[in-house]
Length: 299
Ligand code: HPA
Image (cartoon, rainbow, N blue to C red; front, side, top):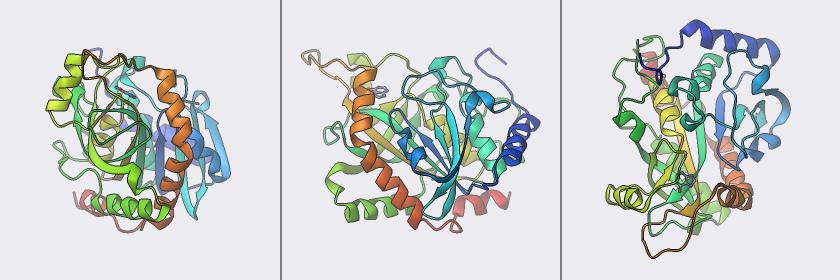
């Protein structure tokens, strides 16, 4: 086991889940991980119980500007939710097991569906800053070089040693989100695409951007794929969306330079639209229709 890997035993996840169960009456069925500048959704939950990450036993700490570092329980459209205002990234120095720690805690709390949102840079010509990309699939680049949250002893109670990833972004939820986009009149802002996770913390060099483009990546960011891999491993149904906050510079002639403040600004600008989309999706999703959960239960 290298320094970049860490095995976390089931008891540690269980201790955190037990503490949360003892401190809130909410029993969430949906978990939401909010990306940079998108944490406002948590503020709209009704009957809130809220915990600073620093007060939750076993929870990692968020160090990024734009990530509040709070876990909020409450109701949205009649469904019980738990919402992470701020996530954990590799570039903060966390192992991938730590960045994905909350996902397994959610599983132990009884969550069935995970919604992930992120801020991402666009490589696709049709995706502009302010657009919303429904994630159809991902490329987990850190996994290619052995930086992977499932490396180490497999806990069969969470999921299989060799989990399939060919169906990790639930098709029904993607269709439902597209329909909701139509109802909200934001179809022009939305399309499906492939998200690539890179380690960060630097934004891409031009040669790296060209490579990602050639590989068919539509949007790139520094999170999400590891969380989705862990969620899929333990049978959670997943829906993901990227808010496009910048285009990734792919030409030596281009004078645009991306920065974190710009990323946060676009997040704030579109946060209400993203919030509406996610809220409607939660309201309309059928909690009991979950092929992923069914498959995991049969293991
Ligand atoms: N690259 C990587 N991560 C990002 C970007 C980007 O351009 N924008 C927001 N997160």
